[in-house]
Length: 401
Image (cartoon, rainbow, N blue to C red; front, side, top):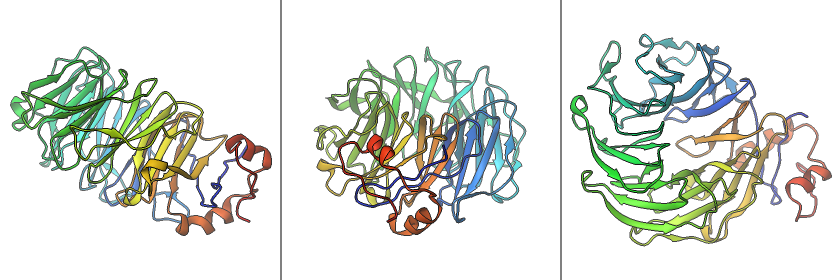
């Protein structure tokens, strides 16, 4: 069946466009929100011009020797980093029509590169490895990336997530071994472990603007740690989330007053984190996905929340009243979206990129701007049978009527 576009009961549209990779992992957006890089297990990276109508590839695919695991733009958008098994490649992305290798491939990793992060000033690249190590690279000067010191060791499992604090130090690493480590990278040549969070799991994200680190994962709890003194982290707040399975994703709103968690239990929850010592849930679980929710992100103005599910649905929730989240739009494709794995959005929040098990899908969630385009290109409207599958409790309404 062809890709479908689905509007919510309120008539707000959703969109699903772009299927070029055979298998897609995740999308990384340039800081200005106009260019998307998508990496795929079909051994390519593609750039998408989000300013085009419709969204279109901006350049020929970038070939890799094996499946692409992660992609990320530097803070200024001038460098694109891609990982393919144990190789990291930096591309000059100043001219999206003609990307060229910025440096020779970085091949020092012994195993697949599983996590990557740029420092806030763009001068350091951190890479995490399935061999349990974290490496730091100097990329702020012309020439090949320079290893900064020795690999950081201490984890006993694959490095699953990396997050620099807003000022660039410390660096937090989460691992499949269920631990989080803090690294002093103020002098990256002699970087060293300065703290470990006890009894935690591997999802990590720094709160915007300060040294509060959110940690969650398989143990289903949410913890906020004050790491102003990385060598002596202080547990600021902990809450039993009520999730019945592991937490798969974290997302702060722009000022850090709300935090969303996604879970393998098919739900999303939103938390009031304005006071880290008193974390409380806002409303109840947000339900609608029929399978695990893989990722979550706040949208434009922090009044929408996006959730990507392994059921193939990208759902947009209206958070004008956070305690009563309402479905604003749902995007799905019975052919392309066979399991969403990652979610990213542009800085203005209007454009999103979704990584899937076999495709890369990009959509615009600004309803007024895309409604006409969606209705013009959707093809046949959603059928009554399809409506019953996705909105079983609501009466059928023809889309784009």
